[in-house]
Length: 155
Image (cartoon, rainbow, N blue to C red; front, side, top):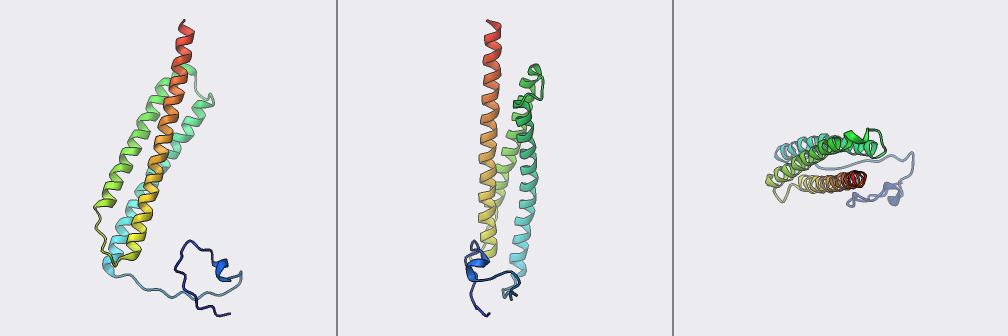
């Protein structure tokens, strides 16, 4: 079967073009210029650092869940929450610096792969910043609950 279709919409599944299991595909594309490849490498390096920050954030989220589920003695929770909050703020700061780093890259109009990669990376970083906000709010909420219980016990 010869389709001869262009896969311009990268979000579309191959099945929507009639491609089935066992079909052979011939991909034709252009090789990026060395200049564009250099810019793509910079973006890939930034992407790796974002992934490392995301792993740290995931770890904080896991520890927070454990803490909320009572895996730490009540008298140690306030200090632990403070440390988690500091780690989230550090991650958010790293992500903000990353956004500035991405923004500082000036990508020429004709570097379409770079422009697409840059845009996707910005969206990814913004998503992780939103996750930082959620975790910070969760920490704050749990801290408030602990403090209100402590006040109630003091009365």
